[in-house]
Amino acid sequence: MTDSTKTKKSGDDEMRPTIDRGQITRRQIREFAIGAGLLSASHSPYSSWAFALSIIGPQDGADKTSRRRNMPDAQTQYPPVPPDDLNRIMAFANPDHDGKLPHIGLVGDTYTITVDGDDTKGRFCVVDMHIPPGGGPGPHRHNFEETFIVLNGEIEATFRGKKSIVHAGETVNIPANAPHMFHNTTANPARLLCICSPAGQEKFFLEVGVPVATRTTPPPKLDDKQMAAFLEKAKALAPKYSTELLKEA
Image (cartoon, rainbow, N blue to C red; front, side, top):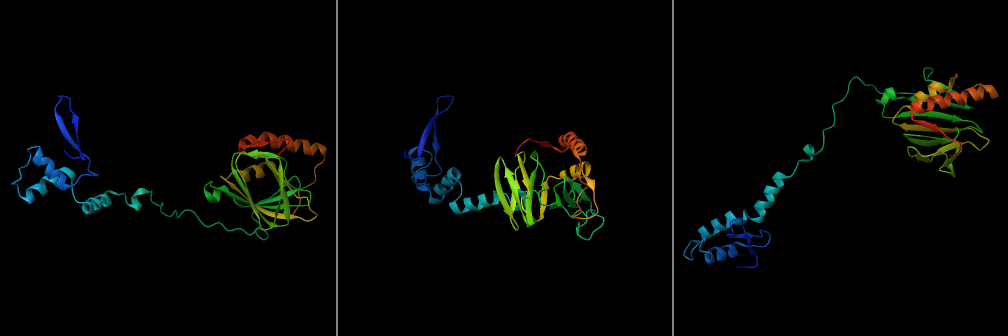
């Protein structure tokens, strides 16, 4: 018996040959079959070939062709792209000239919602932020991703206690649930785009802020009593929008 053939013991203790297809050749099959009395030396080469084929299967080329046929097609391996939803329309916003866009005053800042969750089926929202000198939200965290793209000016971003300056043309992403805040420490206003995914933050701004006239209109200044009432309202609404207000970032 060659090295490429082995024996195993069945339940009735009968010895049966097993074959490693990765190593055995048809010639070895013929020699083994003749030695085992399954073929005689007088059998024609065709008979020997047919017997070997029944043991080790088709030639390598044919085997590869068979494997190619059984490989999943790229178009069936992944789900198809859904059809176009003709009920949805392209959203367009010009925050400086579109009087229908909501401009929201929020503790000194002004936020303009340019793309809301209704436009994206809840996938994300976009808010155009006007941050005057000294402006910016306090420490907080929330259960969604938040990306800031600074268009004009610069902001100081605090992320897990570390401060960084983000200049115009730069982008930062805040991972979900991470403590953070940003602040305009310069003498000039800053403008940035805020993208939240999934959407929902824009609804929080609408509920906690106050409407103002334009993208750069400052909200009314709050006295101590009004500020305390605002903070209580924000704390009460924050859990509804997966947000937590913090003492430090």
